[in-house]
Length: 320
Image (cartoon, rainbow, N blue to C red; front, side, top):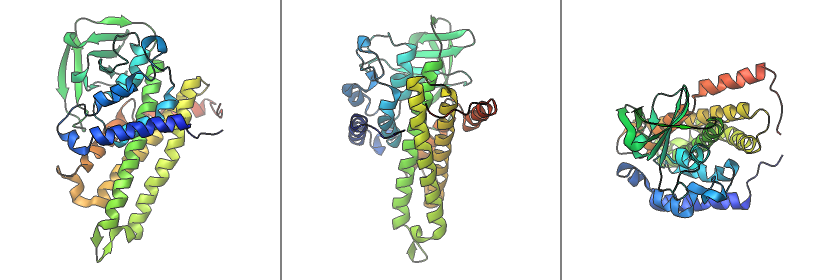
């Protein structure tokens, strides 16, 4: 099985990377809530998964993986996954969704708070009686404390809502894979920053990157990322092709990507030392994003339990 990306998929990722480098620099994370959003919308990013009849391109989640990694690498704020990945399968008929003019937040089952709900025009709530669509003017939002300052959380209450048909499963599976792809991008960026810092930070008259203990920790991160990335690709293929074992593949990808990003965050803090905790260092944005996304759409523990249950139930099939 060839898990290599096509030239078109890599080109999309490269284009998104260039746009975010220009319009979502680290300084923008301190002053803007949605830097680079308009530029991504101009690329058609928010319509990539929508069908042509909704002004989209009808692509699969696999086609977006390199681009989603770049979204994570840039620590892009805003409900990007919810609007670009989940919304096409929840509210795909909403006008202006493909243009990025409509912003969507999602409150998944099993989670208490909705991310970036204050930016959303539409909020999809997975309630006990099914999916509910809440317009922004009908929602009462209460801010709640969260680890990520660029991904604020809100408790959502409402009196008026619209029932949505269908199941949340297809959207949530894709959102989970997209979040895992973001975690891979975050881990890659944390590793790159840590390696660069280890080359210039000196102690006892030598760069700390020359110390065996530091080398081992950075190597552990590299191995974890290289192990997790193919699992995310496999999960995306399983989702796009609806093969047996898709739930197992999605959970394996999210668990591995979350563990890789959290490990990258821990090692980055150890390499940088006390400066890694400071307000002035941009590193804190990537640390917070790794921690917050590792818990989004199911924690690592939840997804590991799902993989264990699938294996114990005899779900040992290989792709496809």
